[in-house]
Image (cartoon, helix red, strand yellow):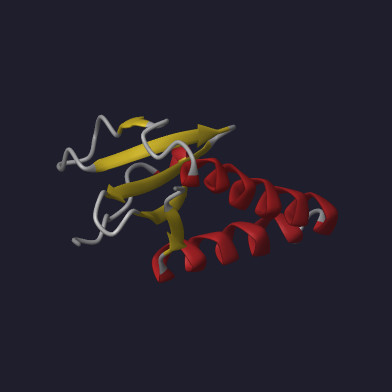
Length: 101
């Protein structure tokens, strides 16, 4: 049985900011990037532990997958079989604030 993938409000806000920023220069590229970042989270439903533990996070439950210059932070909740996408973050921006559970 697959995990349910939930995208948190901070992650939705991040995604909106990323797409808006890129769209200033290229709307098609912005759309592709937004869709690709979302697509990358879908693999987490079948393989929730595919990402590494985020080395600069202060909590071991925070994992990440990387796509180009973006870090997709998430946490796995074995019960009730949920993966929560926490943030979409550009690596050049340093480390984001990771909300507590």
